[in-house]
Image 1 (cartoon, rainbow, N blue to C red):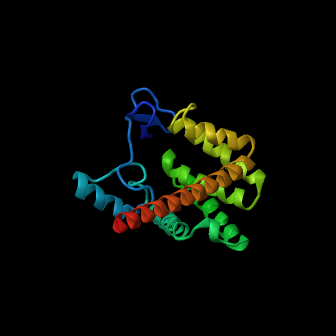
Image 2 (image 1 turned 180 degrees about the horizontal axis):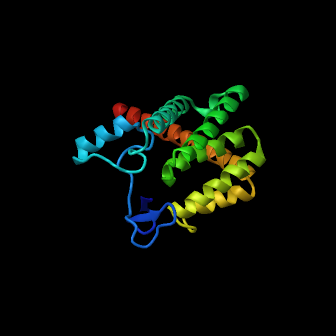
Image 3 (image 1 turned 135 degrees about the vertical axis):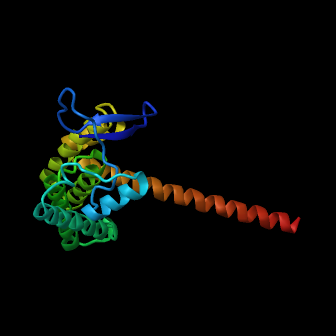
Amino acid sequence: NCCTVWNELSNRLEVYALKRVEQGEELTIEYTGPFETFKSRQTTLMTNWGFRCECELCKCTPEERRKSDGNRAELSRLEFSLAMGVYEERNEKELNAAKEKVTRMDLLMTLEGVLEPNVRLVTITDAFELAVMLRDWKLAKHWAQKGVELLERARGPKHPHTLRMKRYMKDPQKALQDQLARMKDMLKARVDLDKLNDAVKKFLEAEKKA
């Protein structure tokens, strides 16, 4: 029912509630990866911490466990397949296929009760960026709003990432403008580096002649 987040502004590890916590209720966090199956979770916990988990998820019925393990295995496959590609190099058909994958991941994480903000943010950020690349501004606003809700909970309303996503929620096209600005900066940095390399070469050549 809780998660830990490193706050870059306060320079400390903070604990956030992921849902309403009743008075006297134990505060709990995840020890394993969000997409691990039952067997994998139990092995990790016993190996690293020496205990067997008996949380609500791990105590579910065999049928519920099979379904949950199937969902989490699918999440792992989707995460891996998305990590293999670079969005900027894909055509429209491939971008739409990737969009379907991140939408599916978001649904599966909701079904599995994966609430950890930083985990959800990766998928939501991917979905937002894909919507921007496809120029689907309505969908981009939808994902930006979900991102703002998570960022406010995980990093606070005044964190730079939260403020930036709020800006994109109002006008998703600004994300495209920012992306182009970053590309220009990268090109300028590369040109400056080339000039520096040329200057160093000329200096070394002059030193040899001297």
